Length: 192
Ligand code: ADP
Image (cartoon, rainbow, N blue to C red; front, side):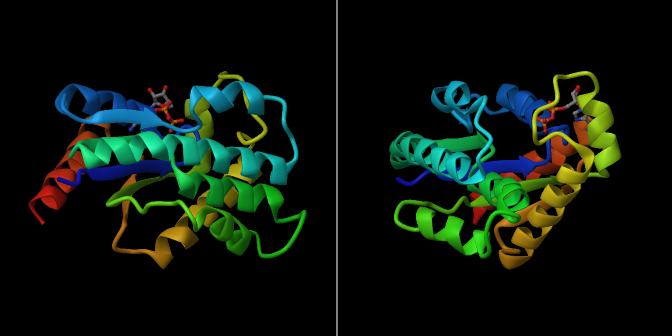
C-alpha cells in the first residue's frame, strides 16, 4: 500500500510549524518530518554561496527521501515542514544574481530522484505580518523583508505551474481555522 505525502511551504513566520504542531495531536498515525534535516543544519549554518547551499540542500533531500520512500511504502502518511519547493523559492531569490536559468538548474539536479507530494499547502500572508511574527527571533540571511517578498513571489509562480498539487492557505486566518482547513483538505484527498 502506498501512503500519502504532504508538504507545508511558505516564508519564515507564515505559521507552518505552528499548524503542523497542532496537527500532530490530531493525526497520531502520521509521520512528521522536516527539512533541512539536523544533519544539514549544522553544516549549512555559515555557508553563503548560493550554489553550495543548493547542492547541500539537494544532497540532504536525497537522504531524507530514502526515509520518506520507506515510510510511504509502508502506507504511512508523511507530513514534511518544507521540501523541494523551499529550494526553488529561496534559492531562485538567492542565486538569481549569480547565474541565469536557476529554476531549470534546480529542476535538473533533482530530476533523477525527486518524488512529487500529493498536496502542498502554501501559506501566504503580507511579509510585514510574517516579520512581526518572527519578532526578535535571530534573523537569518533569509529573513529580511525584501528577500522574503521575492521568496513569496517565487512560491506563487511555482504554485501556478502545478495548481492541482498546491493548496494556497490564507495564513492571516486564526490558527484554529487554518488547522481545520488543512485537516479537511487532507481528509478529502484521502477519499480520492
Ligand atoms: P514558520 O514555521 O512558518 O516559520 P511559526 O509557526 O514558527 O512560523 O510561527 C511564527 C510565529 O507566528 C509564532 O510565534 C506563532 O505563534 C505565530 N503564529 C503562527 N500562526 C499564526 C496565526 N495564524 N495567527 C497569529 N500568529 C500565528
